[in-house]
Length: 187
Image (cartoon, rainbow, N blue to C red):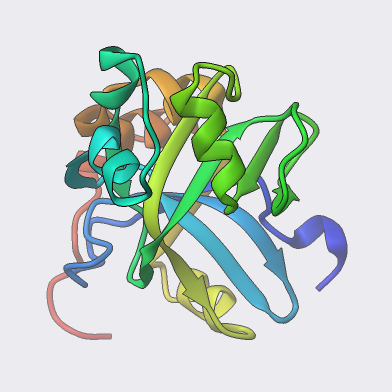
């Protein structure tokens, strides 16, 4: 695979036929895709937790009720006890993976402390866990029509309501995903 065929900085949209309960009707922001595998953050599953609960667990104080009420996402089945922050680039953080010129993924405590203090990235999404694929696994799943891919947008990543993200991501490429049907029978 050439570098430009990797899907970094793209959305993976679960096809309606993907019945795996972990990924059914999900949108995953692909942060890293190389020949060794892929790492993404599911951006439309709630962890049924607010950021204030994470602050408490980490002994971080926040003076902002609005920030403490920020929803936390269930980013995927791997390392669900670990926080992953997808955010607009800028700032110097201890453990950051640049995803694109304007989006980064940070896993270090300092970014959570900055967010709590109101000094963090302009836009951010906090998830527990991530989705991971081994070498060639994502490519195989795409060939078997489990996923669609589309360029990411800030709007969907940070602003679209959680329950609208699956349809919104698919509509970017002109698809009403609800009209795609699961083939009857087996091929």
